[in-house]
Image (cartoon, rainbow, N blue to C red; front, side, top):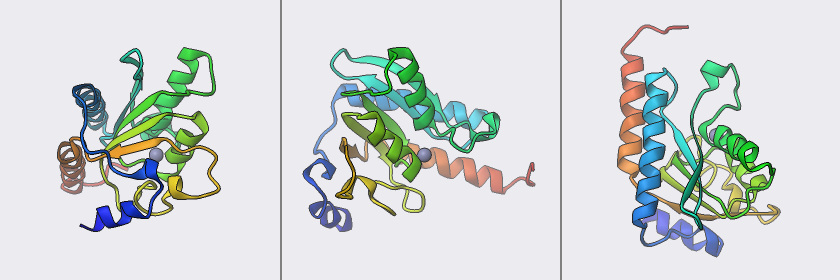
Length: 177
Ligand SMILES: [Zn+2]
C-alpha cells in the first residue's frame, strides 16, 4: 500500500498506530458531532476536539467557522487551540491530544506544533489541503521544533462522507455568494 510505504520514510512519530482505544473513538465521535454542526451552519463539515488524555477530559471543541466569523484562520483546529489556551491560561498545551475529522492544513499543523501538543488523531486524509501526509508534510520537516505523535484513519469513512455529501449538496444549488 502506498501509504505504508510513505510512512516508512517518516520519523517514528509519524507512523500509523495499529489500533485506537475506545476513548479515541469517543473523542472522534465528538469531533464528528462538531463537523455536523458546521454543516448545519453552512460551513465545511470539519470538527476538532482538544483533550487532556491523562484526565480523559475534553478541554475544547470547535468546528470550522471561517465564513461565519469572516476569519480565514477560523479552522476547527485553530478555534479549539485558542479556546483551550484561554481555558488553561497557557499558550503551550503540552501533552494535550487533538482529534480532528480531517487531515490538518499547513496553518493548523503549524499551530499544533507551536502549541506543543502530544498527539494528533485525524480521521480522513486530505490529499489536496492536508499538510501531514500530503503537501508540505510539515511534521516530517527536520527544522520543525516540535512534532506530536500522529495517528490517522479513525472513522475516516464517516468524516469523508460528511464532506462529500456537504459539497455535493452545495454544487447542486446556485452559489449563495
Ligand atoms: Zn486548517
